[in-house]
Length: 334
Image (cartoon, rainbow, N blue to C red; front, side, top):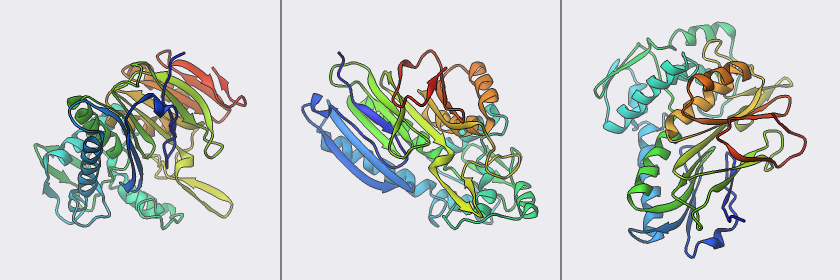
C-alpha cells in the first residue's frame, strides 16, 4: 500500500500523518494574509529544510505586505486611494492581470472590484452588518469590468472604485511558492488558509492523499482522494466566514450581480490544478454559480479538476480525481 501524507483542507490548519516517511522535516505555523499558514518542508535537495522553510515564510510575508488592503502602506491600499491612475510593482501588476482574466472567463462571477460591497457587509474588517438595499445598489455601481484596467504596470480605475485580492491572492502566492519549490527540488505541503499547495513528491514518490473538509461538521472530513504533486487544491465554502443577524446566517462569498451573499445549492467547491491563482478565483466563482452552472463551466474549461459538495450532501467530482472515497457515510458520491 502506498504511504502518503493526508492533508485536511481547512481554513485554519493542516493535518498531516505519516510524516515519518521522510527522514527530515521542518515545520512552521504563523499568521499572514489574515489566516493561519502551515508550512511543512520534507526534503530540499539544494539546501536544508530550514533554509527552504525560511524562504517560503519570507515570500509569504513579502506578498502580504503588497496585497493587504488594510495595510495603509500596501500597493492595494494605494490603488484604493483617491488617485485614479496608480503605478504598481511587477507582482501586483501580475496578480491584477490574472484577476482580470478570471473575471473575463467567469463572465464577472469573480470580480476584485467587489470591495465596496464587502465593506458594507463588514467582510473586510470583521465589523459585520446587514446593509440597506439602496447602499448595496450604490456600491454595485463601482463594481464591474469597467471599474478597473491595467496597462503595463499602471492601474486605471473608476473614481471611488476599490479592489480586494482576497479571492485570488493566496492562489497567486501559492504559485510563486511552487516555483521556488521546483527550482530548489523541494518536497513540501503548504497550507495557506483554505489553499493547499502540494510541492514535489511524497517520500515514496507516490500520490499525495488529500482530505476535503466536511462543510457541515467542524474538523471533520467529507471525502478523501489522491493526487500527484505540483498542484494547488483550493476549497471555498460559505462555512469559512459568516455571521448571523436576526436568526439568519450571511456568508462572505458575495454574488457580484446582487451584492448579497450568493444563494447557491453548493456547500463547498474544491478546485485542483496547476494554476493556483485561477483555481482560487474559480472556486469562489463556481460556488456563487451553483451546481448546474458550475458543472457547465467546468466542462467548457477542462483544465482543472473539481469536487462539489451540494446541499443535498452529494459529492460530484471529475474523473481525474482518483481514488475518491467517503470519509463520512452521510454523503453520497455521484
